[in-house]
Each structure stands twice: as C-alpha cells, then as structure tokens.
Amino acid sequence: MDNETAGKMRGMIRRATLKNIKDNGQTQTASVEVADGVWRDDVEILQPYGFASHVPEDGALAVVLAVGSDEGDLVVLPVANPSKRLGKLSEGDVGLYGQHGDRVTISDGGTIELQAGESISVKVGGVTFVVSADGVDITGGHVKHNGKDIGDTHRHKDVVPGGGNSGVPV
Image (cartoon, rainbow, N blue to C red; front, side):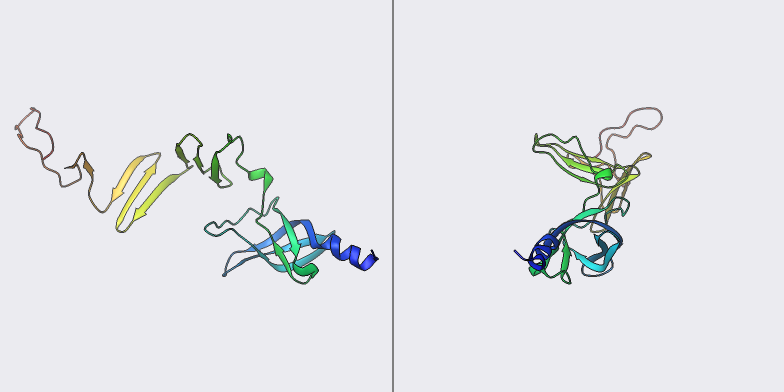
C-alpha cells in the first residue's frame, strides 16, 4: 500500500475534540480538531431521529468520519462528554440526562423516574402541571379524583354551618 492510500485510510475515522458547537439551524455543527492543532469548522453533527442534544463543550468528544475518504466531507457521529455521563445504570435501563443531574431513568423493571433540580413541567393544550420544591401547581383545565371535581370550583354536599364537617365533593 502506498503512503497516500495509507494516509487516506488513517484519516477516514478518527476521535476528535469539539468546540464552537452551533445549534441554530436544521443541522448542528461544530469545529473539529482533526489533527493536533488542525481544525475544521462547521462540520455537521449527526443525531439520532427523535433525540436532540447540545453537549457541553468542556470535554466534548466524538468520532469523525471522512465520507468516501474525503477529508473535505466530514461528519461527526453523536457526541459524548464522559465527565457529564449518567452512570451506574443496571442492565436493561435507559437514561436521559443533562449536565446538572436532571434525568429520566426508565428501569428494566418497569419504573420511570424523573429527577429535576428545579421543577418538572407537563403541558397539554391549555393545561400546565408543574411539580417543584414548593409543591404542585395546575393551571387551566380541571382536577378530578375518582371522577369527582376537586378543583377550585368544586362543591360539597351536606354542608353544615360552623365547625361541622361537610360531605364529600359532589
């Protein structure tokens, strides 16, 4: 094998450091260090369908492919940041995580756990459900328990004036 062919083969797949990650268009791009001190700008980062992330640049690593051995046509495979990775998963578990400890863990045993540093917000149509350290806030819609309205417009039956107890919600 001649030197030119060997060099092209070595350059087809490489591990690279990333910086200048941009997530402002149809594709995400980054500057990629393809050799010591040699950078390529605006290289496309491929991401799996249905999942998007913007990795913290401090420690961002990826595998870079030269498509068709053309170092002018580089793509970055999904990016890793080992220092931020969610670890200690059991076999069969799946995790989605952010850099500050927020995470969704789907366990092999059938449990889904959400953990957030500030709050968890669920929005459906005009209803917002927020869980925070202060409690639970629901905006819009209604709140029912076993088919009974327990929201801000609920009524009780058998209301007794004074200190007595009322009946259950209607």
